[in-house]
Amino acid sequence: MFESLSSRLERSFKILKGEGKITEINVAETLKDVRRALLDADVNYKTAKQFTETVKDKAMGQDVLTAVKPEQLLVKIVHDELALLMGGTATDINIKGSPAIILMAGLQGSGKTTFSGKLAKMLKSKKGKNPLLVADDIYRPAAIEQLKILGAQIEVPVYFEEDSKDPVQIALNAIKQAKQNGNDLVIIDTAGRLAVDEEMMKEITAIKNAVKPDEILFVVDSMTGQDAVNTAKEFNDRLNFDGVVLTKLDGDTRGGAALSIRSIVDKPIKFVGTGEKMDALDVFHPDRMADRILGMGDIVSLVERAQEQYDEEEARRLQKKIAKNQFDFNDFIGQIQQIKKMGNLKDLAAMIPGVGKSIKDLDIDDDAFKSIEAIIYSMTPKERSNPEILNGSRRQRIAAGSGTSTQDVNKLIKQFDQTRKMMKMMTQMKGGKMPQMKK
Image (cartoon, rainbow, N blue to C red; front, side, top):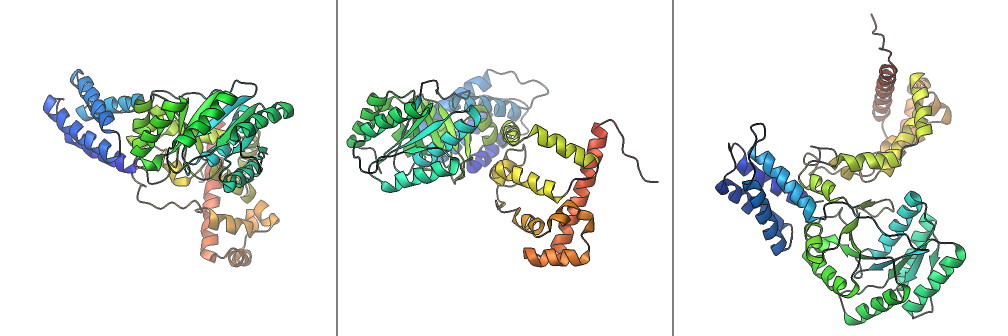
């Protein structure tokens, strides 16, 4: 995400490297390159022009401190302006109705149906909501089937009427059922078209007028670039939606939609989809996105993802086992499962400051743990609980059972032993006990 823009901006700032102070000439040269980078990322021309003019005005009005280099100052100004361009701060979704009604809008293929499922899962797990998904696309039977499958995956009921051709009545019937069944949240997945057309706009406007939603979210495929912004404007002119959802930000996107959409329609980006998995949905934080665009990582989001998987009672149990040197392969595989739940490995690594640029050309497979899991699952329960009994013959059997080599098994066991020793040492130091060194 934004890899091309990030590297281009980094090159732009190098123009100021070695300069003793900010001048109108060197700032103009740098910002000319920044504007070009933004345009290449498919940012709206007027937005890019206004952005660089604002940065220039602020840069020329700054006195550079002795401890701050000119390029560092400009990076700070660009960072702050990028965050403002994308909205400044995160914006909450309105789910205060009884039931709260969320209406989805967007073109066909934008990811409305998948996002509807992701949002239902997020609000169910994080906000304690009891959602009802509504399949209100009367034109694509596959859309109804897709929502039913997603609903089953996340254990959320789906309302649908296979024979009805009245999307307004379907939505009203769904809300009635939600009230009867105690669902405090209704998410309506509407029909899309391949392009904006009058029939589509009349239909979704009629649904809006009938159900009076608490929140209208416009879902857009970020890979469509500037077209996404143009479509957003047309929808907003008719629906006056409350927020934008950018899907497929994990793809080969240039980021123009994320950077332009707020300035064009004056509506906040509320969520971003970063993958196909039902957990791959993030609240949009403009300041954190600015960090990532400028290669500063996003350590706050990384910590938040880790905290979502953190179980305090389990952590205490593990700490006791580590202190007694009883950490085993069952615990090890449990930790791997928690890491996998946090999301795409390359996306997680890119959140660490300074790492994103170094791994941009690496292909980090989401199945990176597959061979480790295969080896551990090829062990017997007794072996997983008692790693010290893993002798040569057992290791050969585990290698054969996991489709790996004995060297792979030996390597994993060696790494496990080193990890266990290090964890015990850290636990002792945390408890105020300095580990005893061997004489």
